[in-house]
Length: 337
Length: 189
Image (cartoon, rainbow over all chains, first blue to last red; front, top):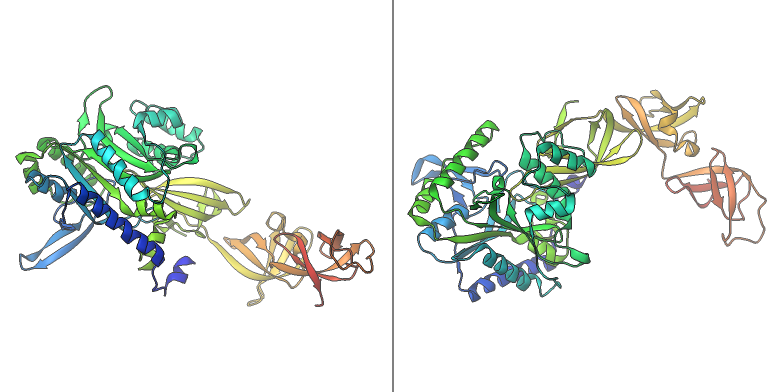
């Protein structure tokens, strides 16, 4: 029905009031980083390699012309991470990028296949220092419109123990399945016993996330940190019992806003993770992009110890605008194309 | 009918779930930035009308349900079946009691209803939003009272009982909202 109504709609989805708000918030972000002397950079959106994470899907396209007469496959970046790390290894110092990122297969109330990502890197920062800076940014951007409560920090394990009474590091898949069932969730048919992280994601999205960053009906930033090593992606793993990925996510009012890492600088370990992902992707029948040898060479040359974070600007704008769907703050979302 | 995947989920889509025909009411795409994508749906069981919540992993499939809505004219009932006719091809079809249970008190001959068919068999009958029915029984009217305040029960020709203003009399034609069961007005027609 909606599709039929929208078939001939040429006007934007968002009101001009919301588009003006978007422009204002983007300007605020640039001011925040200018004051802190973080360099704005632009790296290619089209890049010959892409994320290997089996749960992220890239758009592929082809360049043919001078420099590549036979054609060359390029991927729209799901985040500008690879190229930004090459800048860091080359000695850029602190950098940020505010631009479009692309993810195939993602559209909904909180997702659009093309969205605005704010990504920044801080050489020499600890993860705690970066979380504090994310907090400062969010307070500067959101604070003018919304009253925010004091910031909370909760480990991934404590969140699971608090809200669903299970230890995410040690629970078996059957215990996770049972936990879902006990909370009234009928297990999704395609979620198999091999997908332990999928079961954690099910509990996280259905039972835990809605509780995060809304204490006593107020809004407050909440940082979830110390993820299972199986969800490390490009974060360092801190040995221990249990070992944890040095990664955090920011939530406000149940909305996932940012994902940060203590960045993995070990080229050999990075290559091993890329290869493992590629095996998983191949087995799942997903496309496999070439290894980014230039990134690996940059890591070998030496990535300065640093932390980095990517923040979904659209969601931050949604929060300030007080709307529950990304279409309300996007000029032309998927349904309007 | 084939299968439909989570990418095809949208409100109004008819699917088979646990052996029953269902209609998707709401579909929400849920995905942690680096995690598994899910479709979280609210689904109405078309047999019993109940709405349940289910979650599917992105890529999961369901069997499509052969469910269609057809406009048909109500004819009569024999106590076991309620008969409807397709005004275009004059085909007749009998709906059993469970399909008309909630609405039989609004069914008047010749009214056009929406019949939901599953594999050609009536699953549910939706009467028009408003119907005009004759009063067969009510307490005597009170002259002079046209305010509509207070009120009294009135039995209509189909057996439905509605709350009406005091001035309504036996033989009056009333316009009634079938969704709320409320009296709307007296009718000339």
